[in-house]
Image (cartoon, rainbow, N blue to C red; front, top):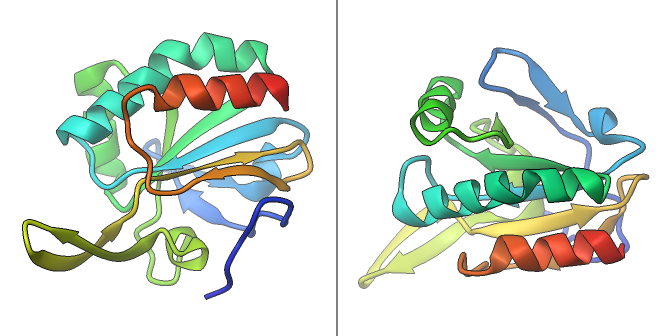
Length: 156
């Protein structure tokens, strides 16, 4: 695993979208992008985060910034998550072993109530129009996060 830092080129990726299509790094070329990694569809924190980004999507669009949420959930689970919560942010599935979350190191060991397990470490990346990392938010706390990312996108 390579460690990525602000100023580095974001790694290439291809991930499945809920409609059966794909999203790639090349698809983001020419626009700023926010890629937020979250643990699991339909869990309280993840639902709040996705709804917060959805609520601010028009503001991100004004700032010329594309939004993409990523988890290891299947395309079918993403479809249900989108429908249940009226989400408008794009979602992608990174279920493949050695996928983007593994490459970035956001799939890793977590601890909860004394139990250790592998899971998605809630993290967000802001990319410039050339796919370079402008800002990284590791180990995100959901409350106020979407607003903080929007402010950074506006100022980028």
